Image 1: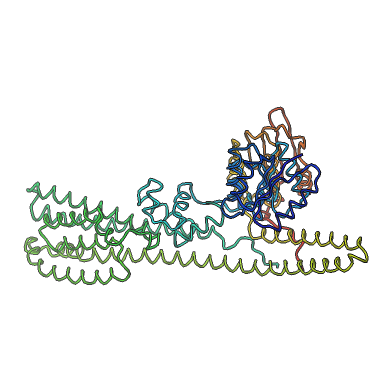
Image 2: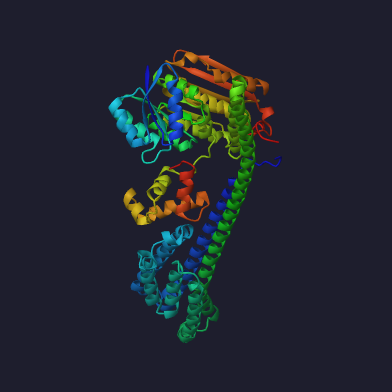
Length: 200
Length: 418
């Protein structure tokens, strides 16, 4: 019997998926959670074999929840998502997530992935991988991405400089080259674009 | 739907443009520095040869130090002018700090030194005005200031002309050169900076234009998406309505309608994905680099070799190969290392994926590879797998001739409503 925890903030999807998974003989849904925090809490308490986590949840998202769960419990984690931004897949893989499935998969496919992952294999859905691979490359360097990330909430140049331990002039140089590469007029636009593309 | 250009507002064009803008900025900066050096040079003749006949070491040292200070200030201010030109006003340092910064102060000190050693207010004022020109002022301030400064410089020329021409003992053309270099200095530099701002403005306008094109592309996508989803939703609604009506009279037929509705949902999804795919599509080298990034994120040591002309390889056939192989390495690989290669071997393009075999590779060469093997075969190429104890390798070769003009992805049209 594989003990499964499901976390999804959309009630209809979560309960339908849980009901469908309960129809499988070898799966037991032991918890249904509405957000990342409660998923982490319940996972520590119940120690499930596999956690099925929605990526887009308020508060803690699926990847962050998976990272926290894995720090304390040897559970395997599968992240479910509607559309996978390539940056997210990269983040998920480095956080040690074992499976990545699009939401559009049928419940019996999801059950198969759960079995696969529970057996110690990794599963990345071809559709998700295709999205991740056919995405535009970020033309920015790591340092430039750091600057955008540090300034993503409207921080001033001086604040970014303090966060990254750089001089204001250096930060300004990075910003100028970012705007040049992306052909944008303001730092805010650049941050929005970088977030949309999953670079930061 | 025939006019499909899968790439929204091409980026390469704006990149070459940006390169020209950079070249222009270097050209303008160099001409400003050159003009400054010429002015300092010609006035050094006056300060050192005519006025003191190289007899006063203090004047020589003072003029040299002043010139160096002015040049350093010019270069630093120019580079700041460039950076500030690229970022928005909000990200520039506050205006007061722009004027009280060290390059400005060095420049002011330099112009004072130059003034004292030449014993002219004229040249000192011209150099000072030029340094202040190099600071970014508010809109419309610089040119007004330059006009006032030019008027003042002409007035100063009339005030000091008698003394200078007297000392030159009638070599009028040299006096005229001194005049021209002093009076023209601030104006010409202000003009150069103005032209630089114009170039930058034009570049931005062009970037805006390409963004506009991208937006129109997006609107077109939205329209097509609406048609496609609307069509499928209508079909699904009808199938479900039928199923509901038949539920009591004929449960089997109702079940069949529900299965059909699920098939319609799948068709809608596939169609949507293909539509979205048409507006994406990256060159093969980028796709391989993305694959390497992903595998690295999964903790593998990755080696990536891509031939320089790999953009010419047929993306429509090799793209799926790369995707399938990447997922296979993630799923079935040993998780320690991978090697990705795309190169040209004579008349063939060759993609090779190698990795350490994993324990759970019961699926072996992978069911996904069969489909690819078929597609590759149709294109006249072949797929080979080789398995050693410590290495699993997939090599796909495609004749380069079939690649001619096929560098772009051409997604299938199925699933789209007519």
